[in-house]
Amino acid sequence: SQTIHQWPATLVQPVGSPLSLECTVEGTSNPNLYWYRQAAGRGLQLLFYSVGIGQISSEVPQNLSASRPQDRQFILSSKKLLLSDSGFYLCAWSDGMNTEAFFGQGTRLTVV
Amino acid sequence: AQSVTQPDIHITVSEGASLELRCNYSYGATPYLFWYVQSPGQGLQLLLKYFSGDTLVQGIKGFEAEFKRSQSSFNLRKPSVHWSDAAEYFCAVGTGGGADGLTFGKGTHLIIQP
Image 1 (cartoon, one colour):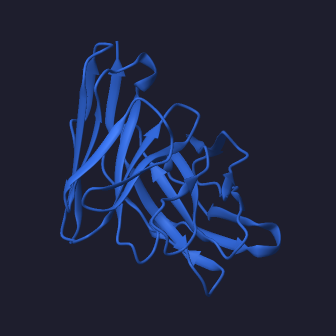
Image 2 (cartoon, rainbow over the protein chains, first blue to last red):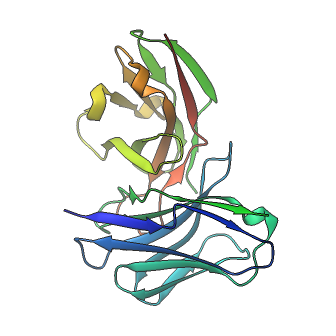
């Protein structure tokens, strides 16, 4: 069966520090991968998606970037965090044949 | 572009009572529709989905939803709620076969009264 792992679960970072959140999927190949951000009362906002290694599409211009160095690995990064980057970040995957998405457990990022 | 509206930010229901959470979507073609549930500090779990066929779909945990094209709605129902159903519920729409992710509503926070 397929599983998705996301870490760390919580992270407190100072303003201006770098960020790296990692997500890996097991049990499937060539998944579509997604990073969402969830802010209180604002639902889920799609940040990036990827249909293959090295292929990244950005939905919202921002202080963040994403990379897909391997088929089942998706990384969310920032060179310098802003206070506004605080939120709950969710990684998800789909099999590309239908749009049903499966989510990781999320990372709570607090920028202080 | 597609959009999803969940008009109720909070809903309070007594344990054992019935539940209906509203969801309206906007999309020009036949949508792929989903309901997800999120417990505090957790990821999202898929409750049910509609792609085509029977407009009444059954999901996990005793939930069901009905697709009504004429009303552009996909409301979630449960005949008798349990305290463990307290959570955040999200309705989402997909374009079907595309890779560009789902569009989510802002969620409905469900509170269960004893």
